[in-house]
Length: 500
Image 1 (cartoon, rainbow, N blue to C red):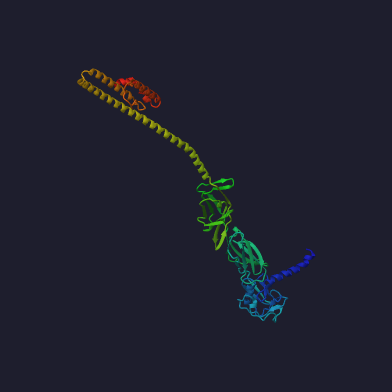
Image 2 (image 1 turned 120 degrees about the horizontal axis):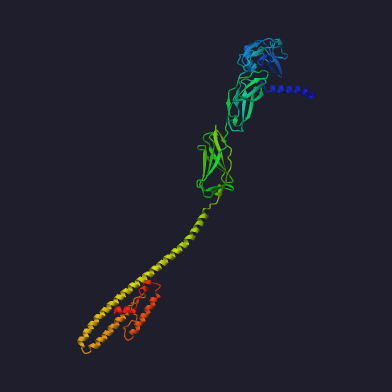
């Protein structure tokens, strides 16, 4: 140790004593101590007054005076009150004489005495006491505003003696019976803790004097609650299936519904979840927790819903509201729906397929209708031809009857020229029948109608040949249209012969 340190050491010691004493004055400015005892709780009584320590005279000194001193100094009950110089003679002034206490006073200066400095004693009459070493228990109080805190907050405990003490003490703070802190003070000590999740427990304190190993009994316990909310979970669901994982993360199709679910592990009943947004016009929405989860439903995804989502759990414990840490961000990108484009493409494709089909169906229906009309026409023409031929045969039968009647008539009235008339009539009837047979030629062009339009006279043979030629030409022209007509073609001469 160098010279400078040796010179400063007394001054530092004196400053420490002054500081300690400055924090331990009674209301009346008096401090007390026991000197030269075999323990902290026994010795010569000395009182500090007006800047110096002084002794107490043993006049009228008894066990009640000793009880007040033992309690004031922080020891146990008083065992004895000593007179004379049992613990040696003091050299300082005598401050008190004729002290008389009842035993319930908190300080020796509260007892009756002659006044400071008034005495008729010498140091051979310095009074002393012996107290038990069982120190009274301190009290522990939580001076923080709340006993329920979250990790990272600070709490303060104060360990205080029941009665003021004027000795230098060691105060100890315990958590669940384990010593965690020591602090030096006189009458009380304040402990400050920055808590974490492991600091939720019961706390107590005690104290001891520096000069002895005796320690007080423990104080009553004080508990604190640490609300350490776990980080909640965030999840995504798309009931309509309008989502997929893309290059930028989760992608939701515009117009589809989706769900964001916030959940947490069971810790406290109730509470609520806050769904927070970033990069969105909506900042936050809240829902109460049901079975430790909440579901946020979005009916139709819109571009306003695009952004980063996170969940926060909030709960009230002991009249305080606590919030959990934020979940990991859930990034959602809203993409345009492809349904309109797909629908348009499908519609155009179907239209391209249906239009040719409709055109083909219309064309086919028209063709079938035309074919049907042609068949009806040919069938009607065949029916008309049959009716015309039948009508011709009836006329021929009538002509034969007329022929017979004419024959009889000519025979009766013109017997002279009956032969000639018969021949003429026969020729006319025969030619008329032949002309009718020629005009009743059946065919696709309704040849049953009269071709010449006049009765056959001198050119009957020529007209007959023309009619036959015309009918054959027409039959050849319609041979490709109606096979039955070609197959049913017959010789005009044969028809004439049959009709004749």
